[in-house]
Image (cartoon, rainbow, N blue to C red; front, side):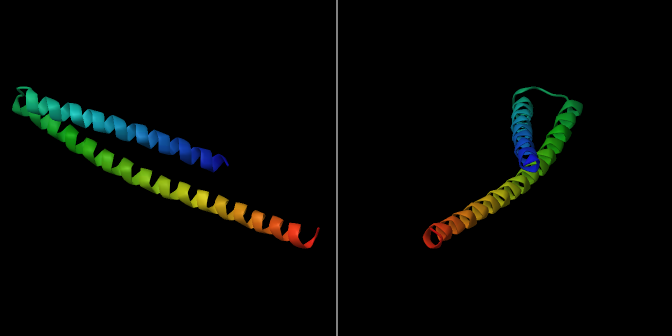
Length: 96
């Protein structure tokens, strides 16, 4: 159960990181469009933008992996509940 909680917390953290990356990317792109920048400033913003996009890609891949792991856990729990239900039904039909 501790693992499931850590997966959910990790998913929440990744979603927050992705949201922050999107906000920062939007801010940088707006700054590049609207402000007069020197070539050094523009280069600095371009490098930051490319590194943020790489970070965003990594976070999204990790979030997908966590969602897949969470789905597998949910599927396992559903299977266990179904097996318990089948045993209960068999018990109710044959042993009462």
